[in-house]
Length: 79
Image 1 (cartoon, rainbow, N blue to C red):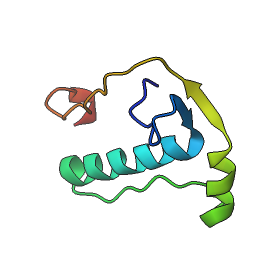
Image 2 (cartoon, one colour; image 1 turned 90 degrees about the horizontal axis):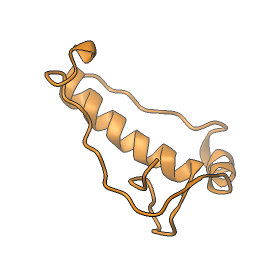
Image 3 (cartoon, rainbow, N blue to C red; image 1 turned 60 degrees about the vertical axis):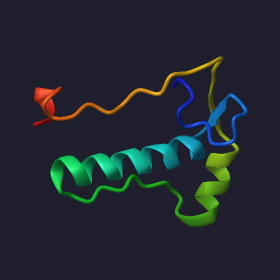
């Protein structure tokens, strides 16, 4: 974790921030590279899960450079 998921800029990535980041990235990648819908789930569902995840710090970081997701042509194992 290098900070790409840090929504509020506090240098702490919570489980909720990571979930939201991955939900965006996975959905975009799956749509563009597989023509499929994929949506990571957070349990428990709805506000209970979001409230729990918001209180769960996963990582602290100093600075980051966000990496791009590989395309299938760059990663043959993804084809």
